[in-house]
Length: 400
Image 1 (cartoon, helix red, strand yellow):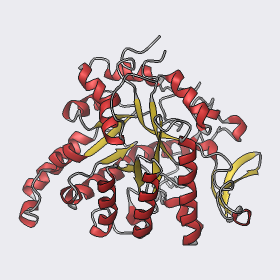
Image 2 (image 1 turned 135 degrees about the horizontal axis):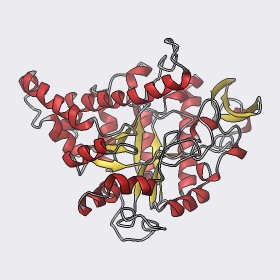
Image 3 (image 1 turned 90 degrees about the horizontal axis):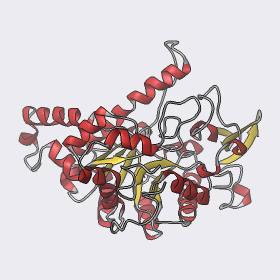
Image 4 (image 1 turned 45 degrees about the vertical axis):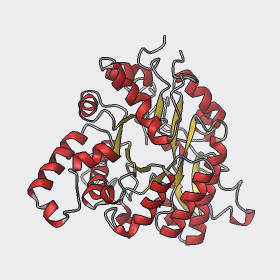
């Protein structure tokens, strides 16, 4: 049966991931580089990403949708165990039709959610080659239907000139946004508040594309070390809850550091970090702004933090209920819908996971809201950000 909420508009899912297929890099670089770039090796009956002799992780850890198990105890071991919709574009489109979703914005896995994992490969030219190769792969993958599969450029943030060039190159190929590291200081780079990054913000603003900050985009450091002995999965759940605070810090840097003031047309997105905390954080920002003498120090700042947010910043949700509705009531033009497919906590149930299917969750969470607000959350806000020209009612928005 069709969802009443999903049938209203073509739904845009603003945060999903693709499981990079085994030949993502090896199909696009000379054979002499195959051992140095990310490639799949079978180790102890499990597919593992390797590069230069270093493990980069297993695709099974982030391909958990519908899997009968909980990581790390049970993951898909090989690509034979991973549903094709996670790594094959045509299969993803078929999956969208079944789920009633018009379009998905796509983020990476292997290079990290802020692209910093590539730096582990060492040689900067090799690293730059890996980033460019991924972006070329993404262009090809999304060409199956670029109106429904939305490419987000992986940006080599550690080199500003290279980053600007890659942004411009990929936008020319049809990419709709850039994915930027939310904690660049983790990689010995200046924090987001620094004017060091202004050439990138200027280039994105000029191109008319948003800058996306995915949760976990910095270095996770020692957070997953269970020094308290609480158990790996319990500690993982704790860390996964607390990394939202990294994006809270990112938004504070962008506002208090004057990025929003200097680039008033620049649009910014806090991805996979929830939205329930947004009203409280902005209330705190406004209070401290007024009482901390910010305008004495920066008389050029003409808005409050909540006003900068309302003008330029967006948040995404995929499991909150009351918290999401509260955030939507305060900032209906700034909240976006996501599913996080196919990650472990995505809105797609497995035999042992409590998640609902996206349309069921959307009905339960959004069903009682005003219709105009529902339209904004499921379509219009994302359509404005990611360059959809108009709402024409076509596609899978009302699929059964």
